[in-house]
Image 1 (cartoon, rainbow, N blue to C red):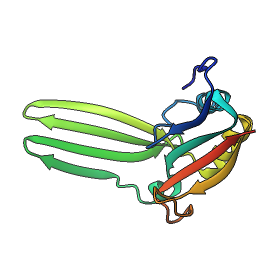
Image 2: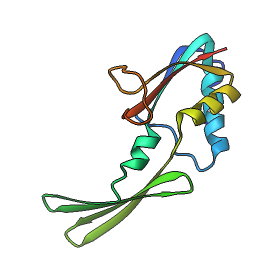
Image 3: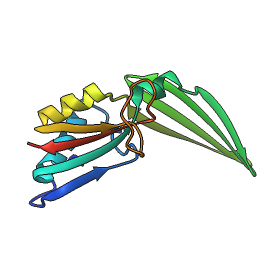
Length: 149
């Protein structure tokens, strides 16, 4: 995403299921958005689906234990450097593994700023896959449709 797509031009680009927000610094998020914008035809549309950062942050489950057959999962979640960090501990018999996942807490205002810098204009927002209106307090998702200027 951070590399130019070349000469390809698309009517639509889809970025779904929070497959955005995993870069270490904000500039890398901007590079990805700019590359998506450049790959759109004039009047092309980017559809970006992301978690509702406000709701996720408020309802963060800090510690969770899941047992399944002979495998035990412990998931610890916390906010650090404006990112949700998820530490996943997996224990199977005597073997233990540890994984990390970090995703930026990007809000509608953050995306509007990124899109503006990439010459994209937000044309619609939705709060779920049924295309209900976005609500910072209630929506599970933040789905944005942005058009290349």
